Image: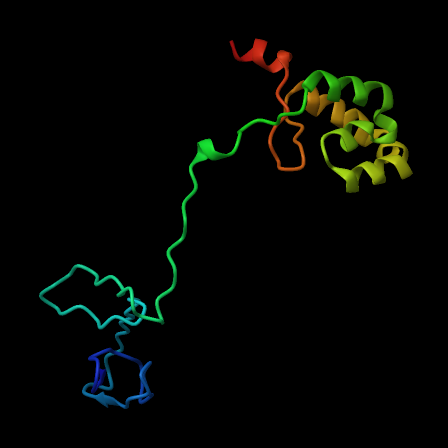
Amino acid sequence: MPICSKCGGVSEGRVFGFRRTPFIDNDPQTVNITIHNNYGAPPPSSADSTPIPPSSTDSTSTPSKVETSASAAPTVSTKSWWVALILCVFLGLFGAHRFYVGKIGTGIIWLLTVGFFAIGWIADIVFLCLSKFTDKQDRPIVGSMSSKRAK
């Protein structure tokens, strides 16, 4: 099995490793691959199985993903369900409800195609009644019909 002469990493065949050092071929019949993803930190010793975090001065480390709490953004839309439903029923063929919730692009499509040939208009009424219709940020517009169903 080929082992790197500098870091001890294992690779397939006679190739140069991550640090551009030649591999030593101990056993050409065995193929094992070990990948160390410690972002520039040296690989952990075999006795120590805990990963080594990258140092704060290491320029090759990648920033960790920033997690946001679910309470930071509202889970439901701030738009009124009643206003959206009334606009959809009476002016839905012209996309008024879509303009109201911030979906300008599909509002223009509804306006030019008469509610996407009335099929989209009917589907939007059903989605609004089931509280599956969302605003521009994909937050559901929740109304009184869905809150009565949930109780």
